[in-house]
Length: 154
Image (cartoon, rainbow, N blue to C red; front, side):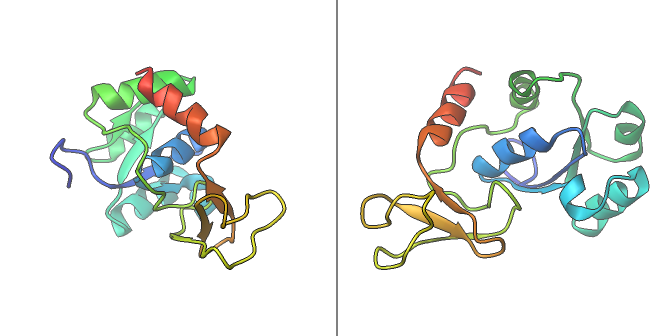
């Protein structure tokens, strides 16, 4: 567990899909209920326990059933992030991505000689990472800058 008291392994409920992406970009291993077929409360609680993940939810009843859960009240991403920052979560972009923003899989740096899809820059020109699970490619482009600006505004 990090020095701030939060866990690095998280699970977020079905209402927090955008938050899952932000947390992954901050370096947290973040399972998302809808990605894991765990939309039902009991399934989500089982996932949290079986994988030793801290639950983040907007559901008061669900939070009451999960030890060490974090209950959020805000609907918008900026408010949710502020609530987590106030709860002691480290919210800054990881120097390099460790988790895929789409599926939470591990990412590896693409070698300069490897091809990239049309939507991604050439790995000779810019550092590009690829998810080893879903194949999604990532780089520090406009989305990265937008997320960084949001986090800096907390």
